[in-house]
Length: 399
Ligand code: SAH
Image (cartoon, rainbow, N blue to C red; front, side, top):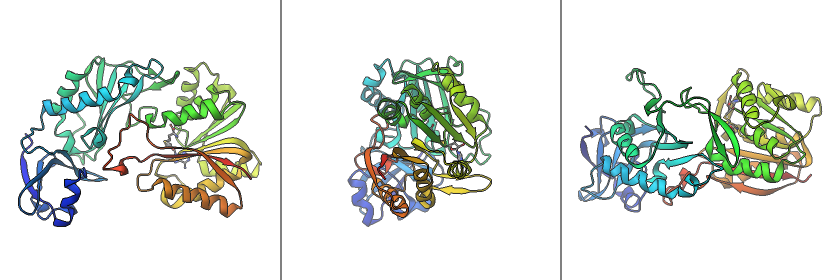
């Protein structure tokens, strides 16, 4: 049972919540110390005890919960989640009807009205991701709602919160329906991806880069030498190869990236032998390429926000300019760098500053030809633009 308590908003934040700000942060409340258990429903009241909104308590790196409703009497139950999921599915009807794309996001957290919860679609299978113990407390209602609203082959889940040993990992990722056979082959704009819903936190592809991959394939790859750094399962390499790249080079530290990238090539009828897959620290590879004077026409940079390898710690905030400079040095004049980051605490303006700084420091000239943020299915709230974490720029190295 999710019990309910009242919380009093500090006067200076009342307006935010009245205006639809969705994130609950403990700093914004007078009497937060009352809050104990994740999953508790909290009524947010103003200093005169007037109801403003209700939400739930759940700890995420972003904050301490999310607003769910502005109706005092609304119950957070199966009917509530059904309404949200139904609207979310309708909003993606074009994707459901698109035969060339069978993998996309169906429910994007606060963008679809419930922060801390995402649901992805993979050719008839659904993947529910819980971002806090708080939202996980609503598991039964959310799953019942999902089952009532969509036709599914099977449902899987991922827990993206620190279970601190409180939760025995007795539940596996499979929830109900039929078990998938993995890899599950899904489509994205006509290309194939191999998906594993039962094998660790990452399933094989980051769906938010769909438009970027398409742009790379359709407009930037033909005849080019393409370097894909932080390549993971090689999704950008596959799209570049499908777009007619002369050769792709994928670089990732993780040993499994080799077999997974080969697999992605094979299921797209591309011979992996025609492409380089290198298991190595990207920063070492840059040094090697500079020494050997290897140049590329297109360099893709899509690092994690933070990463630690044996020799380096990388953080987007501290090191992206350096990363860009390394990439610029091995990009052919007239070539293109596809620079990307999903670091939420960096907006597009600041990201463009990084790009400018990197080129200035090397005395180069550039032109940004395209920028991307999240695609439509990764719906973002008007009142919470911070939710749009993706920044991508196609940068032409002019000089
Ligand atoms: N660009 C990928 C997703 C990147 S996920 C895509 O579009 O699918 C981040 C990847 O960076 C992981 O596969 C991780 O193994 C890799 N990684 C992290 N630090 C690295 C480093 N220093 N050198 C090479 N790869 C690194």
